[in-house]
Length: 334
Image (cartoon, rainbow, N blue to C red; front, side, top):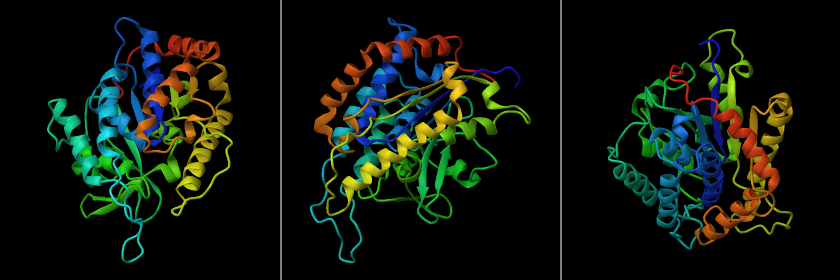
């Protein structure tokens, strides 16, 4: 596949703050065509995400949703899912109980599928569309695992043949203390969300795209545009740890996410300088919102739109769209 210009999209985790990701992407798509914004699946060859970013990756890539369609579905899903389930945080044996109902998340994802006239038991695999992967964590090894819409030598053939869309969504969204892990595959393997190790999946995205190139090709020579979108940076407020350590966990995840972004930028500074790679993320404050604070959806939107109106971000979006708008998805990247 010589001379390709691949477009890649990386989506961070962040619970309800994923709404910020969608409004950033909405502005990028509108900058391509204000009156008829294209679908991301028509411009990106591969979309990868973790946790809420994984859920969005599935909706945009595997379900071929427009950003507006995804925003509506995402807001509805968030409000349906994030209702506290239990007041007692620990079970009889001392194990941590899920704060929210895993079944509600499963049903909400299945509703999105039905609304798209899809079988609610449809598989994640897709031979022709935008390639999609989600990051999760193996309950057995604690290592990051990827669930993909395509088959690869690095992947689990059994999972590729059997994992359903809703199962992949549950696996990548099963944040510790928020949702119970899910067991999928044959034999059953336990998975929880990838936020504790790969909340920013940009390195996984780079590796997956590299694997699909012909031997000897370098991704840096075949890259049209790579966009990484965050869910907000945390502020500098002191952390008061809760009984479950939730606040400390959120700060650690947010710090790891930005550290990953900075490391990727440093390692690929020439691609950022040449306007090939881009990182969009709302600065201080948005990252302090809890993963499940649905009452803050309005604030998330307002803070994101305010950030997008700054001249620095507008200029960055223009440079990004100049690069992204040169071509649509590469049809032979299959």
